[in-house]
Length: 489
Image (cartoon, rainbow, N blue to C red; front, side, top):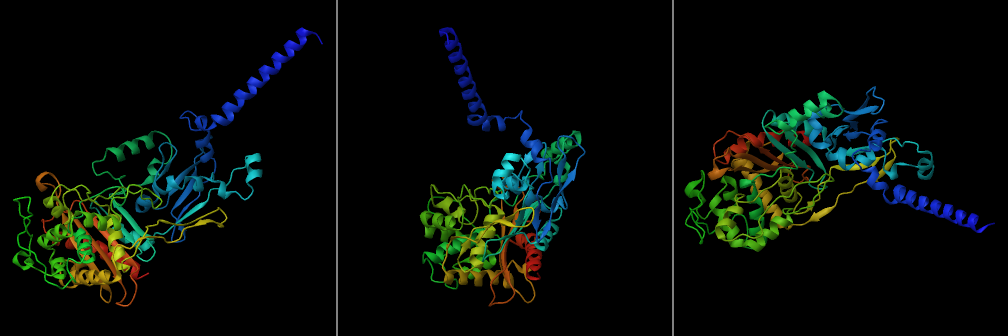
């Protein structure tokens, strides 16, 4: 072979090697970049080339898939009762992507999860589509319906939990929306999307998980927990050292009581919770001290920045850098910068109902293949033990008293044991906004039974007076309906 031929051969070999290196770079190293590029619709087309797996509530699918007649996107997502379950399912849209369970469990529902294939290598080689799997939720269908019906036309939210397991039984947010209107493509979809996003009532906001509110007097359960756990008082029926009105040392502005008046002077914690004495709990928070109040709030789940159920939940706040007793006093009665999601307040009452143990909230029971075989199950997990069983028992006693003798009478269920706490949280500049009506509660069929349900309800547009009674009048009946749905099975 001549020198020229050898050089030509070497040059061709070099070109082949360069081509192979570049091919490897494009197909392996940069594969993710090209797959995720906004202009690459292959993954989206593949996702909607077959029916999507279902989200299951109480053994029945609340989602489906419909043929579109489109050569690209052959199927679109459908919802059997969209507004009822939108705060749980979220939406799956060919135009706008996926949210909530549709988002976090997309790989299961779309069939792209490797765990769904029973012959991974063969499917990868043949590129055979794997049918989408199903997501089984913890939602109680009757409780969910009761929550949405109870809220009605009001703006608000409900979160209900099974205390012993942390299983979420209901997540309602109103006003709701119908995801069916935004699942496909075209002008109607974009118009529906625009209308939903421009609405002043924010129907796509998940108020149960993604909105925080000042919890008002419902937070007094946390402050009571801190006082008892730190031995400020030896029990709920011991007279407190509580002036009326109460003025913290670093301010001249007094904290007063809405309705109980002089009856709050040195009141017991039981009576103070019954009539919701601001003075008693404001001073108790100061006596406990910032460090211990922060510790207790965080033990109940406040200040978590990465909570997932597996859907992400926004952070509920109790300030860690309070600059004086006045702000600590306000924070301890659920005002100032204290803010909580309805799910967070449901966690508080669930821990009390479960004798001091707080379970991590969970929205998914299991994931399965299309044929029903289980891919993954989820077990209850302990988050922590914010209070002792003894303290929990005392707070339960005080919360039952709120329902039997105090502002929570509208939550009473004949034959059942119900404990609750009302709350009205002021908001806006100089408290000029309409107050939020709160109610947190738990119920059990009898005194010796475990509680199957803990509930938190918040109503935004309460149009009520600024007393704790508004929480009992507006939010308590909603909580009652949800608790009854669970108790009645």
